Length: 142
Length: 142
DNA sequence: ACAGCACTGAAAATGATTTTCAAAATAGTC
DNA sequence: GACTATTTTGAAAATCATTTTCAGTGCTGT
Image 1 (cartoon, protein in one colour):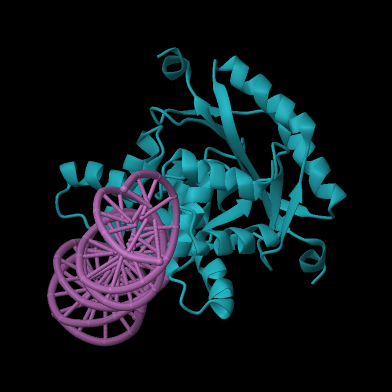
Image 2: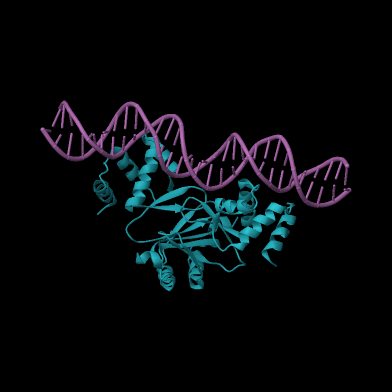
């Protein structure tokens, strides 16, 4: 099932309505491979649909997070960012402190070790967050 | 060198002054093993020194972060938390989503894998952040 | 078309963080 | 110790992201 039907089904299940704005926001959100803050997505959308409101974008992003098609992220710049979640494959981030570049990566071995640690503390992991901060290739050469 | 002389040396190096408040805040901060938000540390300090200001606590915590004796953390509750950094030994966190319990752990194997991933992307790691969110023993039994 | 809700967008409210500014404190010099 | 230049402090105001409010609009089923 694709992300769009996933979302519409979620709306139905919760008795929420499938509106024009929600679809616009969803499409713009999925289209991109970047990590949007509410503000950034709002500005992008407003270019095409000037009447859209900031609050609507924000509320819709929260809905995405709630239904699992978006994940909230904090990279330490004071803004919440949202990224599309494509199925269950999980990835983490390399963040360049110089230029802000964000690279995604996956490392199953790390995930296994996380489970091990959790088991040692009788902890049940639901989600996790791993970010490596440093300098990307370009920035470490300058 | 202990944390206190480390901080005073940092102040001198930056041409900043070693004040009463800064020492009070530093001691209260180091004394604890918890992860303070500005607000929490401010409230704790105010109990003993009613005249202290929120802004002073906040500015001083920022100084700690700048000089390396504190690390800023975001656990997703909208507040920035600070924790004492004791030398270079690094640790990560298990965070209970139910009761807010924070457990620290170290896992050198994970750190090695992080270096491997960074190397694959020609990335130079400066710091990292790993948090596992889920349920602690008590909360998963209820 | 109508009724009942949910949704939207603008504006206001909130909450954390940061800045401002006049008064107080500090470090260096005499 | 007194003097001076500079920094710090604390209270209040400002800022920034996020959240809520509310009147008007739109959707869905009857």
